[in-house]
Length: 424
Image (cartoon, rainbow, N blue to C red; front, side, top):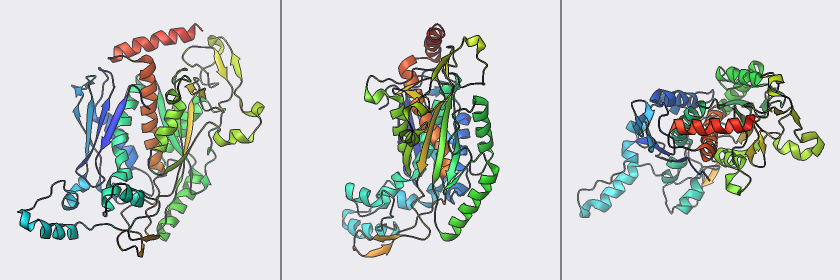
């Protein structure tokens, strides 16, 4: 799906570390561990997070691809150590140590008893399907990698993509629109909102423990999270990601896998527990007449368009603009210059303190599902992760269009395109 920017993550939830390799970032981008740590910290915040966040304080180590504060153009390797590894090193050790072949069988039995083998799949998790697919009787082999802890590595990759995009004044922000059915007044960003108003929502969200820009609704959400915690239950919700400053023409209608909106939906759906994605008015579009949802096109000489007064179709130079943004910033799979608006729905965390019914995969007898330390609500964290995967998808399409081996070359290509836009 990605063309120019490739990345892979590795590591288990309670393993030694999480890692990420990113290939495709041009040379001469200023990048430091502090740039990435800032984003990692944002992921760990949020009311309703579990005890794991009290243990971990994520810090990235840049192992390759950066020298003296600048990227080299070669693959960037990022490492995040798991502090909780100290408590799990026996269970998660990569090595099998046995003294002799004769003692192997008895020693294996002893080790397995210490490993606390999990045979009771949790409803809503990858446990059962994964155990069947990978032919294992120990569900820990599945839950360690399918855990949302993996998103820490994607946050590191996304922070790198964000730093790249910031060089072109592209901002990616988010806020929580809904948790547990309690909606903010901005549960769907008003299509008339100016850039200034959108940034104001983000600033308010950054200071909220649930990333909600509405203080009154914030209190109601916190109360509902507290209630869910007492009941041993969990809550899901909806978050919105907005991309500002994006040029017209990223993505393409020419092939299905080049459509930028498709890449974004793919990226957001890949986040653990995300069950739905909509762009712009989304499903609401299907309930209205065409005349009510199409974004009409207008034109003024650029000098006559007051910055921030309307969401200019091409804020980088053209006088074309639209008064509405029902399409959420896309036409034909391409960015149309309007802010990109994408919402994602997150299901409640499936690990419950009050376990649901399940069946032991060995005995086939009914049991209550195993409980692994977990969150009550992770929607605020998911919104920040949504920014990260959005940044990666945008950066890939940006590099596909304006690619170069160095930042200087990419900027020359970009400036050349903006001259074309201004003259259109």
